[in-house]
Length: 512
Image (cartoon, rainbow, N blue to C red):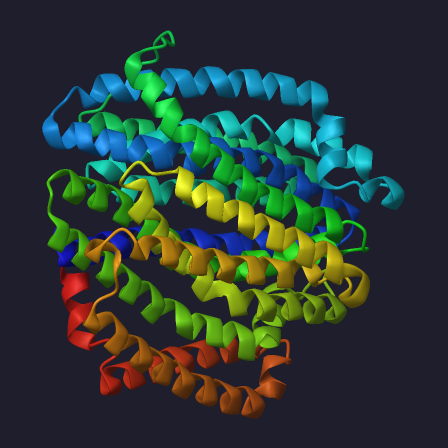
């Protein structure tokens, strides 16, 4: 894959992810308007996070990090890739079906483990009911993640990247329909989750069939290939489990403070926009590319792909981090403050957004560094680093909560993110020249920081001048659009002048 194709793949995934996240904002704004940040909203947050937590543990995190490199190499050498994919799908489906059945029985204990504070706040039983409705989503979305891995390995990114759009479309439609008919909006929202999972699975299944991989369900079998896949996947699963434990620790701490789970979740949704558009897109495209290049012993091509991916990710992430840190309040108030969501909620969410913004470059850099290990089928090293990050997160979240209060988990997440990047970068250095940043990367990094600083100064001044408009009901949407547009224009102008990112390069990517 040439660099231009790498960047084109990143932009394909990024643009679809951007659409998904924009619709996600619409979804979250509707949920907050209908439910506020009270018990029903917090029950939804915990119930929806539960299948997503296991999904990242089994599918997108552990399974795909092991499956995609192995599948990519089989594809490169034409070594029965379809049969391998069908065996992997059969094994994953059987595990997920058992997990779903067990979770339905053990749901009260699961909810107590992830949100023990809900017992005292009175919405524990509601959360259990919501979680039982939502949990089957893990079966459909995890199988969709495997099929997405097949598509990504073949260089087809659009359908897999478009699948998350369906989730938001279904949930928005479910809430709108329930509101128009006077039905319970929270129940419609929860039932929409498994329906959306079925729609997402159908989309990527059809796309994989059109790409020549019409996978069939077969009886699971224990073969040498599956044994190797499991050996590689287990450390990745443990590493994924560590990441999810970090989330659980933060959520458990937050559940001790009224409304904190909802505030942190809303903040998480905002900083996930650049993380999804840039970081996840980089990881999705870079992993199969590095796997194929290393399999073909193209070390120079692999190093170039790694450096250009890191360069692009920081060029798009650092300015986003600056914006989240400097102007979180207008972003949050315009996007979320309506209906039952108050100005006090906006202020709390904005504080968490600023803290998460400080860690955004770290979260994105992880997506560039981890494929260096996963492409070599090395999942043990990232697991060791994840254990250290987990310890840092737990100590910070639990230790700072009595002193700082509800936003301690956000600080802990940011600290753990930077610690993980430091360990990944140090470990990658030992992998040789392939995993080292080149001269062009370092030259552009300082230019990116300068351009981001210029943008930050422009945003602060514009925010001060537009403060009244940003808090006027009829003008605030246009004012925020103007503020964001001014930030984008000032950054890319400064980036072009300093050489951080040439406009000709962006034009070439879009033409491709």
